[in-house]
Amino acid sequence: MVRNVIGSLLALAGATAAVWSPFRAWYDGRLGRHYRLGDLFSGGGVTNVSAELFASLFLPFAVAALITLVGLLFRSRLLVGLAGVVVLGFTVLWMVRVGQAEGTLVVFGDAGDGLGVGAGLAFGGGALLLVASVVLRGRGNREDSHYVAPWDPTVPTLDQPTQSQDYR
Image (cartoon, rainbow, N blue to C red; front, side):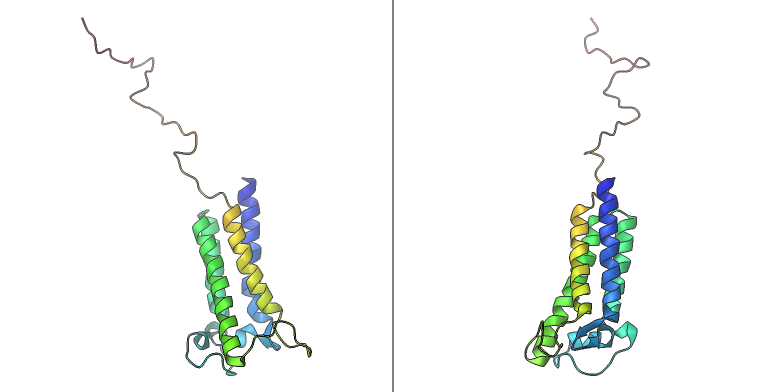
């Protein structure tokens, strides 16, 4: 029970960080919600064209947060882990595409340019979701628990004793 509570809190914190990250600066002061989602999959790479909210990096992170909530509702470690992979996947894909477009990816620049807090939040949120999927106990199997069926025909009871094979 404690593992599920801690895992749920970690998952909620990770999903919150991921959804909040597009509203923070990602690279050179540009907000994550200004990066077009289509630019990540185009041949030209990341452009300076601004995006609408639901056509930006916000969309996959919002979907990951929804997957996280469904995973927590059903106590599914797999769904919470999938949400973490989605967040980390889009964050790493964004880093690769920005690195290709810029020619280099600066972590800390001299003039305050480089990766911003938003990229760090997304990366940390995805990592928290993966940690939460490991910490969560999940639903478990009936075979692993100490479940006893209400009536098992192989177990003798006072009402129905076992029949002997030898009637002689």
